Image (cartoon, rainbow, N blue to C red; front, side):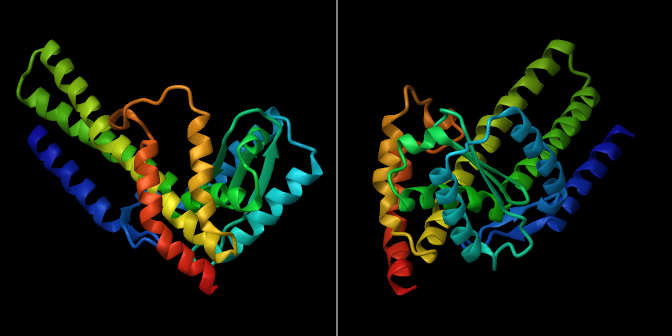
Length: 261
């Protein structure tokens, strides 16, 4: 009975994987979505509303107009890839040197980021990156990976029970699976998403009329703000050297797009 259940679970996961295959705009990478980005959008909108209630919103007219202007231009060139997005750009009055985006088109920029942003082209690099996360459906892919990992853990647990392992052996096996899933799957995909958002965002910035060459000095200034970085293997983001290498490789294409727009 347990063997049949394990086979049924494996077949179900395989069927869901095949049914959820999709293609990321601009890069053409194959991805899998067991949940759609649209399904996450309403939840994200509610979460974003809570964040707006708890975090002060900047009243600086210069920052707000700059973020809205750059956001609108990036969203315009991204529209063919995600035509039904409901974009909202908010500047939070917070010293964090950061920005984030949520499914459906919610994009936040912290005022602290302007310690590093020196021009609209710099801001376009950041907002292009964040908008790219939304367009590529990275949140949906992360949720899907978590669902598959949970399904794999269940299948492993069934197999462990079937093999009549001791309690300590089961704990060791499940701990190894959890560590392997994190280091071997979740973190590499997170780094892939960050690199992909860099690539798509660079293309969007160039198409919107912002010089993509601003990306290199901008990310160098961001690097200078860091205290300590974990080893790339254990990080959600590529190392700074990896990011620079990939951006330099992408730059000729992005510059060509910028010059020929």
